[in-house]
Image (tube, rainbow, N blue to C red; front, top):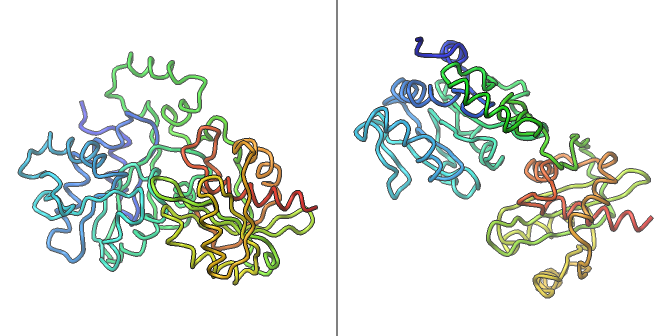
Amino acid sequence: MPLWTPKQAEFIKEGHHRWNFKGGATRSGKTYMDFRYVIPSRIRQRAGKEGLTVILGVTKATIERNVLEPMRTLYGDDLVAYISSDNTVMLFGEKCYALGAEKLSQVSKLRGSSIKYCYGDEVADWSPDVFGLLKSRLDKDYSCFDGTYNPQGPTHWLKEFLDSDADVFSQVYTIDDNPFLPAAFVDNLKREYQGTVLYDRYILGMWAAAEGALFTTHPEYTDDEMLLYDGIAHVDASYGGSDFTAFTCGKREGDKIYLYGKLWNRHVDTVTDFIAQKTHELRCSPIYMETNADKGYLGREFRRMGEQTRLYNEFQNKFFKIATFLRKWWPNIVFLEGTDKAYISQILSYTEAAEHDDAPDSAACVCRILDRRE
């Protein structure tokens, strides 16, 4: 029996670009070769060269479970150590950084550092800001990235990158690309996923829209910020935890709404100066914000800064609001260049059961106000 599947052999032969990706079906063999061959060989090829070696995953726990533990089973503790308190781990004689990529703050130590090799696990679940930072760090002529992902919606930021003209080698795996799986297991898995979006993603390896997704088309963009002049602003505030702070500026012109959006995974107090500055730049006033959670605290803070505000109590069901106003206007919304990709991504991945809804909620509030003004 051959050591590699045809798909894995293709990667070994062709996967020598700046960006090398394997994505698609679960249990399709896309990661086994990384543990056995790709990661060890990439690290040893660059041993002693300038730059950092980095392993990025959603969290350190997933790095240990998905990457280090399988490699340790193959090569032992001497070659694959455990992550230490300073986020480093010895791999095949080289010190590597092991960092979570869900939030930009978790990988801030990479700022200003050159990276000679990076392995990325579950890349589609990363913050796009982390991936953006990584692009500027792979600055050696021998720098390269290997990454794996499970496909999500067809408008995901990672799919946009894979379809771009960057130096990318990208493979898509289906469940049938792994001939080493028992036939009964494959048949059972296909039957279990049949008729669901998971069949497209986990069996066929396709980027497929989530069941219940409200927004399935990419928006248009403009670089003319004057189209937002004399519009309004809105803040959906986070006060800690896993929530995001979303900021939206908007202006209606006839049957078009022009929007600008920012999204931060941090407390609103850390971004009030930026929000105030941006509303001045885009001449969007007043700033609308609800008082349900903070009893008017944020409004008082902005007023103390001299900003014009409009406070309101929110009574409308959030899903109904998004499904009504943002969905109604979505085909006629044009975003200003510079809008966060994470802001757009959160809208495009929104369903009634979405974990995060701050960007679509803020955008829907602006659309509701502008819809009623007409």
